[in-house]
Amino acid sequence: MADKPQNWVLMVTAQSPTNIAVIKYWGKRDETLILPVNDSISVTLDPKHLCTTTTVAVSPSFDRDRMWLNGKEISLSGGRYQNCLREIRGRASSVEDDEKGIRIQKQDWEKLHVHIASYNNFPTAAGLASSAAGFACLVFALAKLMNVKEDQGKLSAIARQGSGSACRSLYGGFVKWVMGNVENGSDSIAIQLASETHWDDLVIIIAVVSSLQKETSSTSGMRESVETSALLNYRSKEVVPKRILQMEEAIRTHDFPSFARLTCADSNQFHAVCLDTCPPIFYMNDTSHRIINYMEKWNRFEEKPQVAYTFDAGPNAVLIARNRKVASLLLQRLLFYFPPLPDTDMDSYVLGDKSILKDAGVEAMKDVEALPSPPELMNNVPSKRHAGDVSYFICTRPGRGPILLADESQALLHPKTGLPK
Image (tube, rainbow, N blue to C red; front, side):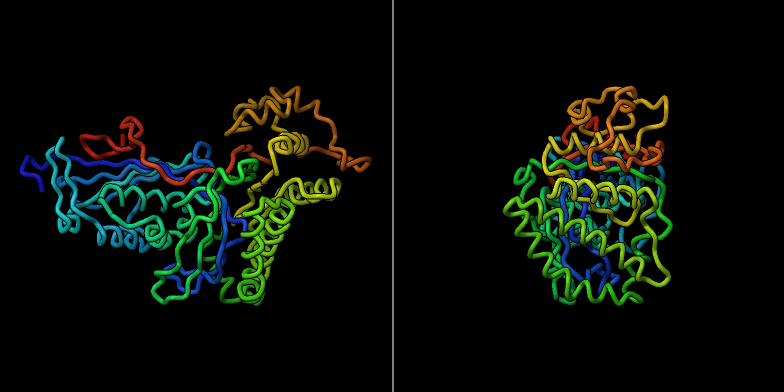
């Protein structure tokens, strides 16, 4: 290490996106290595709107590994964090920073401790894949700090050991997590099917029905499904392999009707597996079911899919519109069915890409109140609109993979102390 006084701090800050699976991952064949029972495919969401920012720091003055999540210190003793730290440290290379007079030899990394600060700009543990963005960002940032020379595919296998879906957040666009066959999991990695610019017509609107932590975690839910659901076994062996091929083709050819049909069917089957689990798991709620009903009505009325819906392990709806024009019509419908409570500021009710709100012709509550009943309802107008049932909406799109943030002002740790700012 450096000959200078041992009070230096070396830091890296990264930003990683979350992702939403359109062909779901549910069930592990190996709990420790986090190896799935089937392949899955996801869309990476634009990190401008949903992301994790992580700063990692190393210093000889640190006496132990420490981590802060959303400002609160958490334990790093869990196996998943330890697996990621061990795997990255084992691949570390020498680092030299002449400006700061720092020289870290490869073997020094085993003795040095790290500080980690991580912040999600969206709800944690509410079914929006916060752990996917979090572990992807942690592994990406640590790999940069420790000068790890592995490619993204190899890094995805490490991120997978933190959170299965995290491996897919190492890439932008459309990503496939290959389940692999090797016992040690070395071939269970993520690969990019297409970049975020491949199908940039798509617009994604997330209805945050609840930002509360879910009652049944994904980890325990999966374990119970593997142990008790006959449908899961059939799904992984008979259904998913065919859907993976069909979804790859739909993405490659921009075939939205097939993409929507597969996305909706796979989401519904995933939740059917949850119901088939003993005891049954309920991730969706009445609002989730209403959203499905309204989207199905609209798609049938238009005689071709306008929007795909998918729900992860939570009640929040991820709605994928075929293009921007459809997205504005989708937002009009969502605001008609689920208006904000009186006196709500529209700026806090529709987040992300607010230009879609403008496309929808909505600027204030009076515009929401004036929205006409969607034509697919015809005379069957609902007796009431469900004000307050949705907490807020996030408008986004397919996005890029993780990046380094060079601006030190965006770091979450203080450059001199390595403690949270």
